[in-house]
Length: 86
Image (cartoon, rainbow, N blue to C red; front, side, top):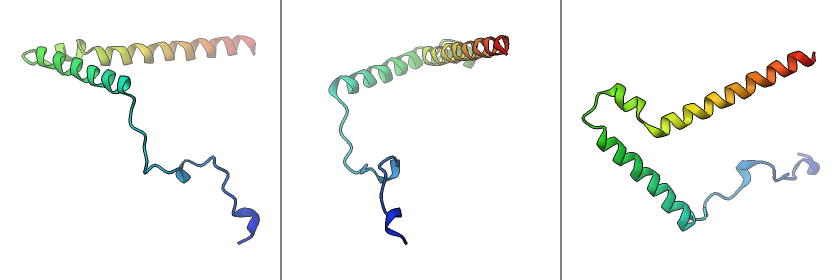
């Protein structure tokens, strides 16, 4: 192999050292625990309900759906403006 091809560019994710991962900051860990606790409490409250009520009352799922809808609307608006420019 030629020596000019033996240089690592540093842009590859596979050449990083993932054996020494830094721990999360205390605030981040507390926030994550709070989210999990909120979801668990919500699921416990909904335990006696049917599946359709559980699906419509899940705040995490609703938030994700709203974000996806907003992205789709933004993309369709961009496509419309691009077609008007053409």
